[in-house]
Image (cartoon, rainbow, N blue to C red; front, side):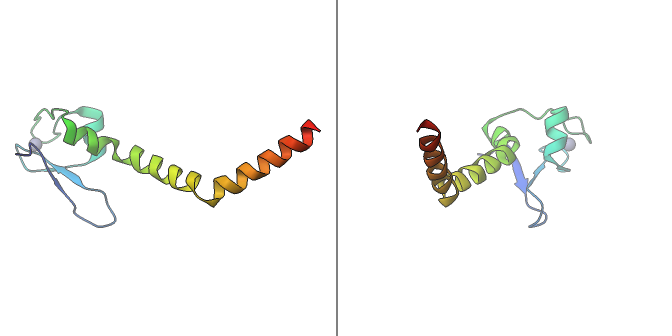
Length: 90
Ligand SMILES: [Zn+2]
């Protein structure tokens, strides 16, 4: 059974955590800074679900970087670097 519930209130906005005690909606920034519910003071225990939730922006950013790095952007960059290196070596 899941310990925490997350709710997507708007497609533009990331999921929010539903406080297990008072059911208020908690934003990532709330949990990151206080680790407890600002409404009822319920302690938010950092389990895998919460850690995944808190890390999601970082992971998304990393995935985006990987996506660009693995595409034609990197291969063309590498070819450029190689030919530059070759020229300077000669
Ligand atoms: Zn609460």
